[in-house]
Length: 200
Image 1 (cartoon, rainbow, N blue to C red):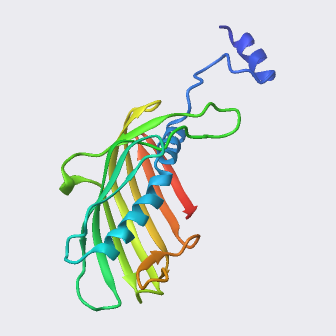
Image 2 (cartoon, rainbow, N blue to C red):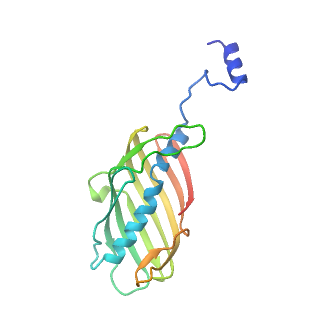
């Protein structure tokens, strides 16, 4: 196609010239969006494990993806009567998907499925530090890599920081205070990076 023709198509807002694929940073954004809901689920399962623990190892906690697959949280929690405790958790996924992802106006939704390695010691790590249990605060990180299939293929690596409030659930157990958790950091996929800044 000639340069004159390209100029014409550009002038009328068409995309016949050049590559119409999304940018690498946009691919990283989409890769994260497919995991966004799982961050909240992982926190919920982590707190469920904390409340159920009778030893250093928490009972494994699992949840289904909204569409397919399973999310599994395993790991350890500090023992003792201290009001400050830490958790060292692993996030496993098998064929996990929360269904169609709305990526924005005038864009078709995408479908992504995620998996982690089956080696728990190498799965993405969720670390949490609870302060002034039960009515206090928590901080943490979620760091690690998931494999993608579907409309995007390859790896997505999360490097997230978490902070929020905790509260008594009414029965003496601890839960995350809804709407108080901030999630910041990056999601990297291929050559692209997406800067995460959300509230849960």
